[in-house]
Amino acid sequence: APPRTGKTVLLKKIAKSLTDNYDDIHVSVLLVDERPEEVTDFIRTTQAEVFASSNDKNTQSHIRIT
Image (tube, rainbow, N blue to C red; front, side, top):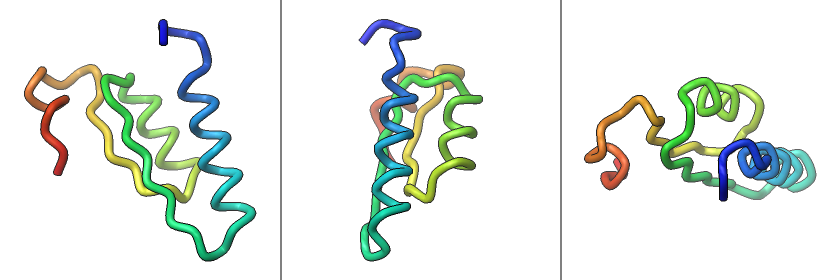
């Protein structure tokens, strides 16, 4: 999706809603090529397990998940 269309906000709301409403759920989120502040905000505002490569990383970081 194009930048500034709300995709990260929507994902954050879905993750937060799931963890708020279901005690026995484990939510994992993969964020690729996001701004570093978006990644930090996602980690701070949700209880989801976040895997991310921010857009300040090199190309190899985007294709390797650890």
